[in-house]
Length: 374
Image (cartoon, rainbow, N blue to C red; front, side, top):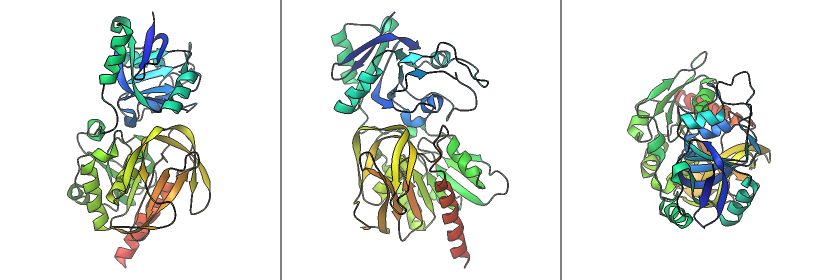
């Protein structure tokens, strides 16, 4: 039995069904990580995307109950080169193939993942579809159906992946801070990283207003990663402006970084093919240190790179840049307690170069509490 991966520009790849059979549509992207496939699959930021893994062997360690970043698989489709025939790991509970099939995720195994990646690097991310089993149809019809599927620009997806009800992640050990975390597509490891540092984390839906956030009287506010086009998330921008007005310390990652950019009056734009993987070099402009970091984003912030710039909340600066393409990887307010990064410091599958950012957030909350006390 064959399966087809069809791109909107007419390029077609043939392979065999992997996971569930049927059809699926999404933005075609690639992930360069050699590990962490289970975290990738369950990351809400991949909602409505078909993900191709560039590593040649996927599924070697099966899947387990400990590593998911959410309660379900969020990718709309999955592309691998060669699935593992026999998974081997002491924590494994089932094969990746069975896991995808159980969750209805349509995939394809094919030898052309390198050619696919090169194609996307030249042409950019684009809409795609995977078709197998009874979903087969004339090729011209499949291409047209792909072209009619929704794109990522203009897509408001954060509310689709966010928690419906607030919940609390308790601090580990002695409670030091109360953090209000707005879930725009939060990964499970993020509140755990905060809890490890004595933070009681109150996770709120994406629709939470500034009043909802500040009603918790938090020591700090966190905005998470998430899917979709940040230009559509006016509700999150309005909430963050209320937080900034209050002077409450703020930390954002990924989508949260883009929301901070918009709250400061900056624009966002779609990257040609995005950054997805665990090997992106980012430089801290304050120290010159280079971090190898985990990424998952297709949009970026437009901001001046040549020194501080004025915003409605005082001076700000670009704190981090990507050494591959020079795009903005972090923002910092100089006159208020707020900063953000475009990458993922929680990095459950590694690397952990950026874990210090959670410590900086705690130091910022501690310092602000001290100033208010004084």
